[in-house]
Image 1 (cartoon, one colour):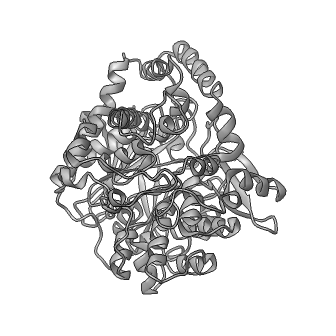
Image 2 (image 1 turned 90 degrees about the vertical axis):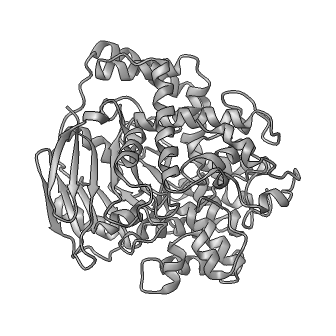
Image 3 (image 1 turned 180 degrees about the vertical axis):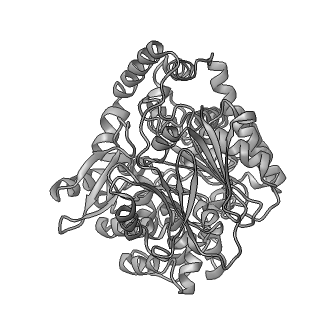
Length: 575
């Protein structure tokens, strides 16, 4: 039976527990329930009272397509509220082989305590001295771990930014291609890991097996239909595999919603130089890969392998948001330099979205010149070092704005906004404002319906229908995260009548329980209730559910749109 593993990072004691009150939960539903139940809302995010929770989804290990995502939860050092940061990689594939549903890291060592490597086995936990890899960037640290544990070792790493407890730091997870290229990127989860003096977590590479469904025949039928759904939709079977998420660069630019020069304009003149089509062309010319999975069992294959000019591997998972953040948002059009910045973020363990916003704030503050990619590269390299500028940048856009005397800071609840201007994609703006996670597009991806016309057609420039759209997507997304499914399955789900029932059938057959469409909705609603309850205890009010004022005051070209929702109107988007 799946268990919870509790690890006390101060005493180095551990215990395996039955799920108990957490039975029936997984992924984000489990991390948010644990955080809301066990973490004081008013605690400091880097204190011993905070807990770092990693949970595989309800379908983890089942073999259902795209069910290998991992949720990382804690009180966020960046937002001060609850956070779930979602990652691919192999970690959620191996946890079920150890009969572990979730790991809860508790307490914290003394300030001068050394960092540890935590080895996790099915029957024990061992702490090892991490000094050989402390201070290392993530790629060389992972290479050292491969020497110690074998090439196929499954790891989680806090980079130099996490060691310094910087608020924009990530946790980097190893992917199927033996690189630490998958990020639990948002909200500073790496800082919480660093505060507990954990440099790396290593799972037993000898763990074998797969979750055996209780009802194997029913599972086979549901799994086959699930694969047909994903492979039958043009976005999940054609667009994403061909161009990755950067296929959106031209699409969002054409829609007039590509935030440019720190959210001043909706279109970027040099968009062709950073488009998904351009990236695919470069990848193919250098012998890279335009499609590969971020975890075993991914059939969408939207990740990529980008090589440098000499044909050497540079970075993976070259996402649309990253290309936008270091590209249009900073007026940079050199795709190789943008790829280099992506690699540096993976090395240092910092969120690319937050860094894209932060770098634009630095440009507004005169620290860098607009479009100066070489200076941007050098600035990112300082993160995790002894250079004070690195600490400023590594703490995110709000912190940098205060340091540099800038008042144009595109954040909600302290978190940098992603790659869609809310004035011209109003549905995702509602999500930015009202999700408990802070400015986060993945919490309710209304871009699907506003721009791509998936699951219906809600005019992105109009106020009409956006609040209901965002609310429904926030509920569905919370459930998908709880199941451990990739968010991108939503494109096919929204356009397929029996898709929700198919997911319910997968859960029911895997666990031998009744799981209906009502249960599907309830899982998402209850997850959001946990998160909103925690944020209330952390001191958030309805007045925190709003965008920065400049979105209300400045018209966005080319549609001359503004943000025009009141705080009171937005409350209807919350469960």
